[in-house]
Length: 356
Image (cartoon, rainbow, N blue to C red; front, side, top):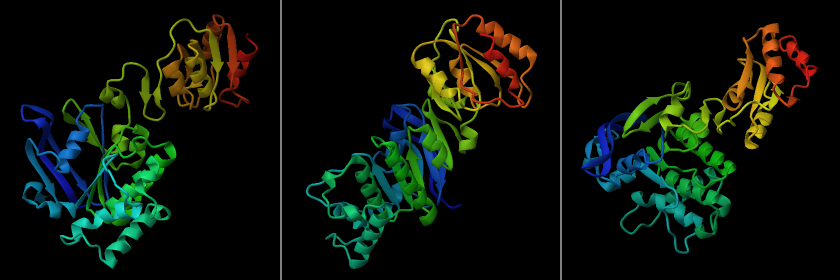
């Protein structure tokens, strides 16, 4: 893949004496989506503003299309880089088609007059973002989700080699988050556009990104694929999570209730998860078991239960595990079973039903 953007020893910030982020080395290639993640204040937006030349670098070099940005004219940069900032556009009686058309200005003359070919590109972009039905509506009349799609149409009209997006899903509901990111993905793959963006939604960042840059303590703490980043305990360390927990597969869980278990939950196959979370919301400490360590319930139970009685993967529930579970049940005031049927591997759990 051909690098469209390269950062070499890049240092960014607002004052030379106080850099926000230092000595970054990374690149973004054609058709690739690279996402910045990290805690608030880590420097993600500062970095994107520096890449987009809204801020001058405090050190190092930004290469766009293999040439230093400092040597490129603004008009040349505008033909290669499109910046997408949430809520950063003000319009006065402009229709959505007018707003999208501003993406063609880098290609017009000084009078900003669009040719028929330019307007065709505008209409194509509106169709691609499913906003062609909004073309004649005033931009100010739209919902946040509709505005985001029109702004993406404007970026598409610009025909950039690099699209830079700063938290593009902010203020959007889940439907519009997914729709917008699907459009970004389509743009990267169908038009070979390089994408550099920041996201707070870790689950979406994991699913849409080709690579991630993890920003922490003023540096790129780790750069890798989602499979490399979202494993083990790394996300908890990156964000400094102390209240609650984070699992790469299940996401965030609230802090578990403290105290001796009052309820014992016999679960498995994902059936216990809603009960675990319900008990947690009510502040009721509970125990869970007997769960195989590869069961769908296990990560959630481990995060929220006071105690989890476990069994080895693919092994039948043993008498030893049953004895441990019974000793815990003896301390509880209630037993809840979420399992509707028992098979060969969890047959031992049936014995717990008649214990109390």
